[in-house]
Amino acid sequence: MDAFLSGVSIVFDPYNFMLIIMGLLIGTVIGILPGIGATMTTALLLPFTMVMQPLPALSLLLSIYCSNAFAGAISAILVNVPGSSSAMITCIEGYPLAKRGEAGRALGVATVAGTLAGIFSVFAFLLAAPLLAGVAYQFGPPEYFALMLFALSMVASISNEGSAKNLISAAFGVLLGTVGIDFVTGADRFTFGYMGLSEGFKVVPILIGLFAITELLLQTHTLHIVVERVAMKAMKLPSRDDYKKIWKAILSGSGIGTFIGILPAEGGTVASIVAYNEQKRWSRNKHEYGNGSIEGLAAAEAANNSATGGAMVPTLALGIPGSAVTAVILVGLTAQGVRPGPYLFEEQPEFIYAIFAIMLLANVLWLFMGLLGAKVFALLTLLPNALLWPSVFVLAVVGSYSLDQSMIDVWVMLGFGILGYFMKRFGFSVVPLAMGLILGGMLETSLKQSMIIFQQDWSLFFVRPIVLFFFACTLVGVFSAQIFGFINRRRDRKLGLNGGGGAPAAPVMRDPAN
Image 1 (cartoon, rainbow, N blue to C red):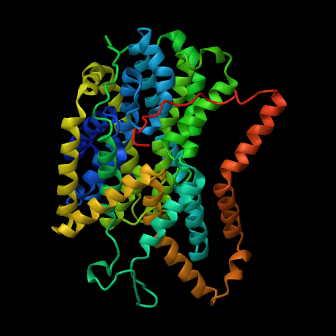
Image 2 (image 1 turned 90 degrees about the vertical axis):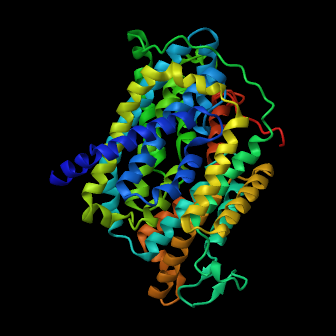
Image 3 (image 1 turned 60 degrees about the horizontal axis):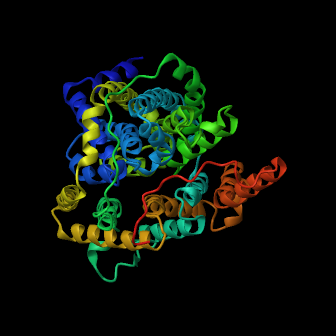
């Protein structure tokens, strides 16, 4: 109880409280502006949080993470352009509502569904993270190797680019993680005689390049595009009849979103798609879907927002990012000397309770911000990209240079930004690369420790039950698209359907260069 009160009291410190408000405003702004997203923003701000203590830095980053999940619905509903990829499904039902004059109602449903789901996921995090950490006490290097392998396999479904391309991107990230001196043999690897690479690549400049510069270069193809914006008079809270229609959708979306958020490398995009599909499957009002269904809207927004709390479970309990944003947050924590994992719960329980309080407060505060300021925030959809993206570039350069006052970090950031741009052009996602880079070092370390324990006999991996379980999960993760595709095709044949049981195609911002 003392640890709980201590953690909660830290959040209500005036400095931390101010950072939460600031993070909510920043997260809302970048959530509304299409193309930026929480991942890019947290990567840009990560160098500036290095001068803070861990909890103030988390107050800023987590409040950005939470509010961004809410705010992406504003541009999705009013402009039919998702502020982030996780808001794609919101476009399907939100924009038709806005076009028939119900933009305020759509935003009200999205805000209430997202807030309730976000609060649900925070309590799920508080309950699930210690349980998962308790299980992790039984892990040795072989179990951690199998777990890291499973986490990397989950990137197969992290984007719509295709399982093979995602795994290739992740493997390249693991390769980048091997650059530097081998801690076992002492040999230089891929340094090409340059001593600056002896400790490997610095992760923060790479993340800034992959998420900020890559998107900046892609946005240069869309500067001439003019989008149609639907005017909104005022935000409307859901009516009693609306609540009767959406409460099941909120409940199922919250559960699905939290569960998918807990899975390593997944996030709000996958959660919203799955929750929307399942809600449509069991709905009695299938004819409304695609034409402005508040059930579908509530399910997608609930899943999107509940994935934030779920993603923090593996991040803190196992040190494995649950999403792209938590990957950036994990880098920030480790850079400040905080080592996520089971011992964190035993040695610093007040730290966990403080994170719980930060996310709970951020969800509650955004409900009031969204209801009171939605009309003002909606004006941000008119901000031209020609003014926005130069500011992003300046922040990227300053943030990369400020880490060690080194221009090398700036060149690394720019180089990986260009690399990410060409990866996107050829259909590769940059998120698996970032995941591979972050997890690659831990994967290699646990493998080498395991082989030392096993005296180089790799067959001993297969006599440990937990290792076998994660190896089986890895196979499912790699071949999940084929497995679930086969299951869905069989189900459709039995029902006499011809591909009509799924969700309609989500409106995605297309890159004219592709």
